Amino acid sequence: MYGNDFEQPGAATLLDEVEAAEQALRAAAERRVAAARAGGTGDTGGAEAELQEYFDAVVAADQKIEPRDWMPEAYRKTLVRQIAQHAHSEIIGMQPEGNWISRAPSLKRKAILLAKVQDEAGHGLYLYAAAETLGIDREELVGLLLTGRQKYSSIFNYPTLTWADVGAIGWLVDGAAIVNQVPLCRCSYGPYARAMIRICKEESFHQRQGYEILYTLAHGTPEQKAMAQDAVDRWWYPSLAMFGPPDTASTHSEQSMAWKIKRFSNDDLRQRFVDMCVPQAEVLGLSIPDPDLRWNDERGAYDYTQPDYDELFRVIRGDGPCNRQRMAHRRRADADGAWVREAAAAYAAKRSARPAEAAARPAEAAA
Ligand code: 3HC
Image (tube, rainbow, N blue to C red; front, side, top):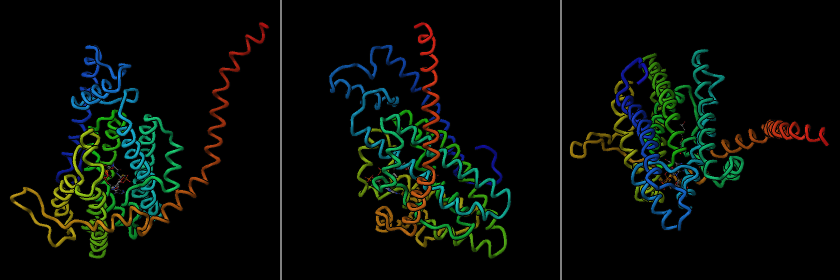
């Protein structure tokens, strides 16, 4: 863990896992070369059964599928769906915290929050770029978001009512995101796995800045502590719901886990998150709003109250507290930025025409 100011149980382990995933990625690339030399490449030009066999072998050996490799169409579609939803979440996720940039309590807090929100934009861009390697372009994906045909995470449809919400988002929302995303560093699709390594390293700073805001408030005046507790009370269950429906209602988990896109089920990750948060809440001096939260010796994990999954499905369908506001804002920003995209495209077209013009000139002169 890069220098920590105070104890934050469990957080270092996650970064160690990112490090290990990065090393595994390099090792997989080396094994891949060995496999290609031995005669097996993804591009056999062979029959579909042969290609499928090679794909299955690569996944089973924990190597990476790369953009030029053959892949089953359903694998490609699943990745496009998940990576795009993830990218959209990063972009829409800038809104709840962006709301506090102008009201952050000090210049230092403002600068940190500004950098964090910019990081989220960067994450969106890495992820759109990873999705583009699957043969779909960013403009199309953004169109699918703006017309409501692709989703973004439920969590960003909740309001940020006080400054403490910025802390709670960092601790709980970014914390849940990291628990969910560290295993994605080992995803079977190379470009997604590589993007996730960088994202997780940055997310760990985000999580710690939120934790530090809450720590400061929780050790401040009674009013500040009450504000921190109120934010944790409101963000706890939506953060648990972020992990998705329970395993029994998760439509994609089984297949995604077989393909090693997802490495753990929604419920397993949710449990890991709860187990990580309990000791962290103790250090903060804040309580988790669940009267039934208790250690279960037999399971070696905390028993806890499940989030309201009817509420999760309602929010996913577009009926959360802020869905309409978030989408309206995104559409407005897209329309406001149209001239920038047009200008950038015209400039790029002009630049790419230049070498052709230059190459044509000597020929013209000779004629
Ligand atoms: N919000 C919105 N939709 C959700 C959801 C949530 N929290 N959880 C599940 N869903 C949707 C799924 O997309 C799926 O819908 P679809 O079939 O129409 O696409 C349906 O509910 C059923 O869920 P499944 O469990 O079958 O879906 P998945 O196997 O895709 O699992 C997931 C859901 C765990 C969110 C998985 O897609 C995943 O790990 N995605 C990558 C991470 C991600 O997108 N995180 C979003 C937050 S990003 C973020 O937090 C930014 C940070 O800066 C804070």
